[in-house]
Amino acid sequence: MKLECPPEEVKRIAALCTTRWHRDYTRIKLRSDPVYAAALREITGTHLPVLDIGCGIGLLAMYLRGAGYTAPVTGFDYDTEKIQAARRMAERSGFTDLNYAAGDARREMPDFSGHVIILDILQFFTPAEQDALLALAAARVAPGGKLIIRSGLREATWRHRVTILGDWIAKITFWMKAAPVCYPTREQFERVLTQQGLQVHLEPMWGGTPFNNYLIVAERQA
Ligand SMILES: C[S@@+](CC[C@H](N)C(=O)[O-])C[C@H]1O[C@@H](n2cnc3c(N)ncnc32)[C@H](O)[C@@H]1O
Image (cartoon, rainbow, N blue to C red; front, side, top):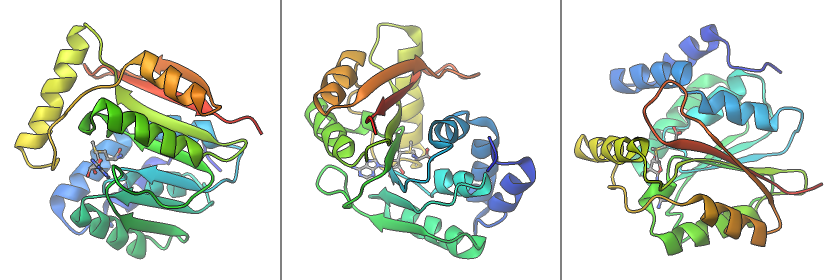
């Protein structure tokens, strides 16, 4: 297993997309967004299945497979077109044990035990829905597993204001079905995830972007 998905594999994965827009998006995201390598780093050395809530077109699963992570990966998203695109890519990839399901995480979530990953979706939920989603996700973290989240945090900073703008642009350009509703707080992650028996750690994940993103890793002791 590698510490990142090699550039030639990113190129091959992007070529699996059936539209030009998805191809360009996949190539740019997998090359430039540090969150996929960060998630890989967190689960390296384990062989637990992965549940990706709000998986979009399934880029995380592709990245993990491209780096040699072979445990089953399940992607879950309420956007049926993205789920179809993820399934098409998986079929054409030759990778095995990739599953995708369509559903609204505010109302349902697959039965699961392993690592749970939530990238960039909590802003679409109300605070009560965020708490409920975090609790449901935490309940699916196996002993020795992790809940890995990337989210903007609600803070009085210019980065937070730029993050809101970016999410509105995604909505106006129809890339996202929903507009941002509310950004979670540091205290909220610590409160909800500690109550669920997880040890929580937050660190900024700004990379080269102007966004107020954080990586939140919550671990259940083996
Ligand atoms: C910003 S995208 C992130 C996609 C993916 N996590 C990634 O990193 O490539 C947010 C995703 O969350 C999904 N989403 C938003 N609200 C959802 C909900 N209530 N249930 C399931 N998926 C949802 C959207 O359809 C979208 O694919």
